[in-house]
Length: 140
Image (cartoon, rainbow, N blue to C red; front, side, top):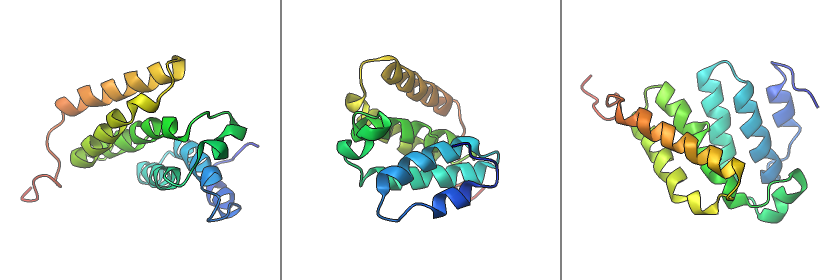
């Protein structure tokens, strides 16, 4: 299925609230299609909220062996940590980085796992040079 720009909400509306696996994976990919940063972060938030309700068996049909292994990618990605950092929300980006790092043991020891580890390391490096955000320092 090819998703055209503008069809994101239609795809989402075709899912049911109880199908957390489908919503998690769909939101994860819809975030990558977004050119608007706020919309991208919104889809990433949907994906992360859904993954907490997903079991390994739910994701097996789409080739994801462990639900816990998807979480570090969602925190990085997806998405969410990177999106928050690009929005200047460094406190929230750090929170996502820490959550992603805490879940590293769930990653497979393959190319995918190595890619996510490199992404988290990159996010960590970018955060060390990022100034505090307005959420950290409301007087600005």
